[in-house]
Amino acid sequence: IYREYSVDPQERAFVGEVMTTDVKVVSSNATLGEVMSVYFGPDQSHRGFPVLDEHGVLVGMLDRDTLLHGVRTHGEQARLSALFENRKTNVALSTETCQLVGRRMAVEHLERLPVVADQHSMRLVGIVSRSDLLKPAQQTFHEEHVRERLLRR
Image (cartoon, rainbow, N blue to C red; front, side, top):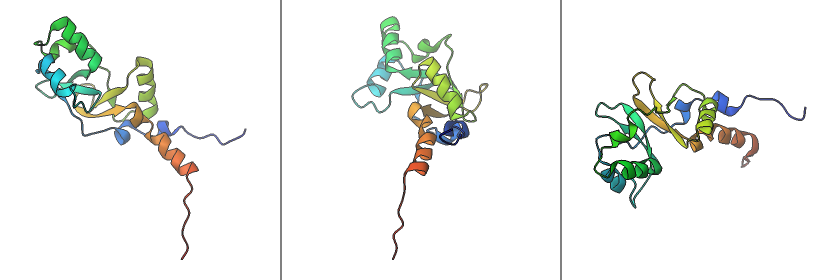
């Protein structure tokens, strides 16, 4: 054995510790044309957005590919809710480990997942991206490999 065995840092960290809680959301009542110009125009700030219905319930995640496909099939005047009818939404819970959610994202080929309070209410509490899931490993690397010198007076 060349080195000590240790617990994967992603197994010790929970999604609630690394997720982003300040999330920009899109209303499911907006038209596809409105969403295209406001959220995916030249001032685009994020690659994906959670979509909430009028009650604040998560109905899906919207990215550029999904939106463009919706515009081609439904037209720009269709409501965003039309894209998520009869469609299962992948979600994460804040109490799940980063390792578990990371594996789910890898299997499903996802870049980000909405984080909900629970599967029943589907109330959005944050969003977790692949880079968020690396935070525990980055912290462990910093602790083990970065040496800081103390200055003597």
